[in-house]
Picture 1 (cartoon, one colour):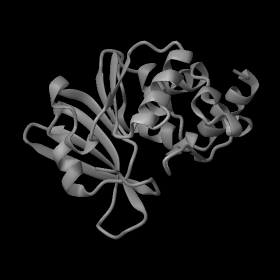
Picture 2 (cartoon, helix red, strand yellow):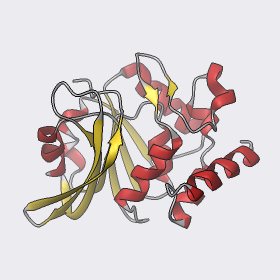
Picture 3 (cartoon, one colour):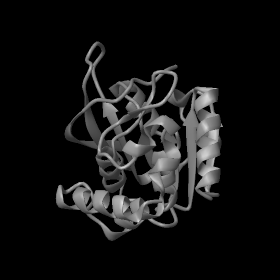
Picture 4 (cartoon, one colour):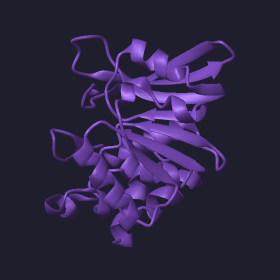
Length: 209
């Protein structure tokens, strides 16, 4: 990993307000992003922009990965569900902040790519699951945090939030049917209710089912 590029990116994201905590900054510096992009795009690995994968998917821009990680406020003992694993990069960042990450990916080729990348990065606390993420992962619920790396509707958001522990946090790009752009929504489970707040507009590839 080119530390100068990684440090430059982390410093930029900190100055722009995306990285707020030392733990998230440390996670960014410890995960070599070039392992999670397509070989032909490695020279852009530390650019703050999304990059294409295959099957029409993308690896999210670093600022969005940082923003989502900060929003859910991971703690070292947390169990995390990530939906839309893609190349495995968001799961890799979360793995540095949580005890265990279950990363769901509906595309078998992408799931295999993510598993390979995580292995190359020597990350052992992420389990990649090939399945429809719209249903969550009942087998290992409840979760401390859920991070959704693809666009969903509010009905799906609320359904997935049911797999949270009391006090758990969920972050996802949410849109109305037909809308291209989404709002980044944070939800906090409070007993039997879900408190939500918006954190601005974003554009993610929509969830496939």
